[in-house]
Length: 251
Length: 251
Image (cartoon, rainbow over all chains, first blue to last red; front, side, top):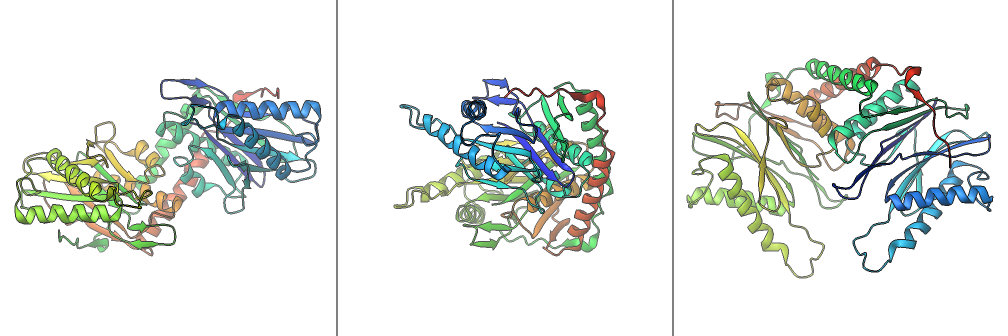
């Protein structure tokens, strides 16, 4: 399993990904899922992938080769992120289809989904989620984030906290809490946790973080969060008798 | 969809359930999922169900009839909760099988899962989750809660907060937050929210709450929670330069 988040807010982008892959619970490996591309200096493009590892690797390789060979559509000449997402969707579908009908592989699932994020030229920064079917969506003012992989555990904190005008540093910590909650609740999502904070118009990969299993920052984050959660629960309004109802016992 | 929680802690039980059922997104109804039974005074038994509504209703009816007819095994004569869970699992399987092979219903899924909770005689209070297959598990000291239905959104707060020695009033509010997070993130889980706080050895249904959509308590709870979460995110340790790494850009 995998969990990746892309938050696209006014100040820029936050990308967070875990690094655990598994082909069965007894076949667990560590693979980073955040892939920045070497591109022309007018753009910055990062890809995150979830799903079949062979598919995501084949897609990355193809995007890389297309760029080197400067084929008609590649990451160096797409004019905007939506064009990049359409191109990625096309390549992804192609790679999935190559292995879909292999004989004797009825239970085999080559599907993969992606988030492609960054900024191109004078276009605003942004992020797209590319489904296994090749189509894609972007984030919105109401939902300024995208998730792929094991998205449910970490969604409530994003739903409640992330707004377009959230400060990028707070948004980054919020995304880390979302990741930490998911790691705690699902054994198939695990560290190292990678995070890129991209401030709009910076065209820079400088604010990149990678937190290992024993990262003292993640530990501090988790402890602080759990202490504050306890305080938050304690501070919740008490239940008074006015809310008590009579339980209908009829069975 | 459905979301039900049973927390079994030192001071007693907290049961929380939503009330939304749907057979497709355009066929939504309201059905309570928390069902207390009329039993002998030496026991208190509550059932919560998720899954196929026809199955859960058929199971409830059968348990009710068996009790009235005083058949060999019924809720009035089971000696402990694990026996009740085994009996419930047996009835549930029977009801599911009745409709499993109906002709022309290949996509039909009669499966249902249950939580049965309460206290019987001198036995300690407790809760069991009965799977669709009829087998069951109970909670533990490490994981003092059970969930059925849409369990992922609301699990992190329970994972982080609920302990055996959590006070029952705080545990109740924590379960309500877990339910509120799920309602917010999944449209197929909805109010009214029912909650029973059962203090051990009380054999009483007195602390029953039912919160409607427009409940001012739920609104206060949600506001308080979101304010405190914001404070919690603000208080998280800041990211300093010592954690910055060089991003490997190779593709």
